[in-house]
Length: 272
Image: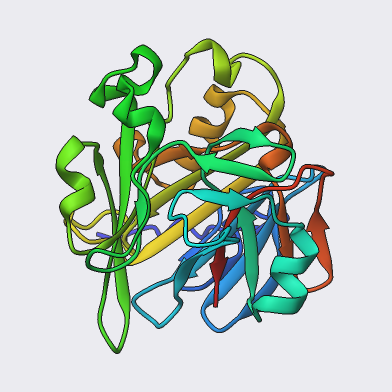
């Protein structure tokens, strides 16, 4: 008995961004190009937009810091710092982006709205709004971004906020849950947005408490739902996302590229 073999000729077609772009230990979704990679920090640009996703591989040595402009000895009243001053004069970084929500005291000073602290008891702000019950919000409306650092590398985690988080030893900053829809965030309006997400290098691996990768997604025009979908595309689950200040506070600067508005802000994230 003879066996017949079927010979197939396969024609492979290659499409741009078919499998994303590799950088900092992960692949981007379809539709992104990589603008920058240095010191385990990558900048990806969504094609035909000003939306960028900044990826930092913490396990490989990238570090996230909180930079503020203090006023006198106050641990909560801060200057509204000029963006270029943060970047050019004080810090040498691969990326800088806007961060904490804040309330105005006068034209030159601001209060960070929610808790933010360095290691140990070095509190930048206990969050005046939180002590006043957050304007009617509950713990469920907030998320805490925590960093676990040692002399070699750091890891990060996003968790549901607890009032007691301010007593933790780790470096942390509090923001809003990604789908928070209070009137102040204008959830359905296309405005500037800053979201942060954490994930593992291999997103299919079992969930771990501390994540290796942190992503800063900054857009000049998006709804909250669009930002959630954007980070979903990067394999970040909603429970691992946190919302920070948006509108004209959603600024970034890296290399010779920036999304820079006129708003002066008192606190920024820096990565190096």
